[in-house]
Amino acid sequence: MSNDALRTLTDKSEIIDVFNRYATGIDQRDEALFRACFVEDLQVEMEGVEPITGGATQWVDLALSAVGGYETTHHIVTNHDIRIDGDQATGVAYLQAQHWNPDSSFLVGGYYTNEFRRTNDGWRISKLTLKVTWTKPG
Image (spheres, helix red, strand yellow):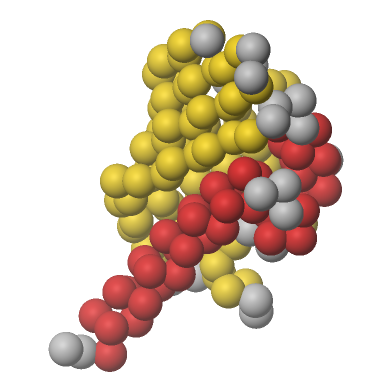
């Protein structure tokens, strides 16, 4: 295997790890883990949410506050398609998220089309875009 092929596989694995840390961080309400997924000048485009212009800090505060109203959440991120171009990458992945309280729940499905940037601390999300394709209140 060439060094370039090995580098590509390593980069893809590291980007999938960012998707996984994103889901784990939000579900465990682990602010540090969740925050470490993003560059400071993060952009966010998500249905039902005004575009985030305040960067990672604004997004982390908003996202953790939104899930804070649920007893538990479970985000499943899968079917990763990663395209790398130097120190930039695009990662598309499916999402299914369950938001649960004893008396109600909310399910959502869709897909992320995230842009990533290689930093001194590894790959980070520079633009988070979520396309919601279905929802189901419970």
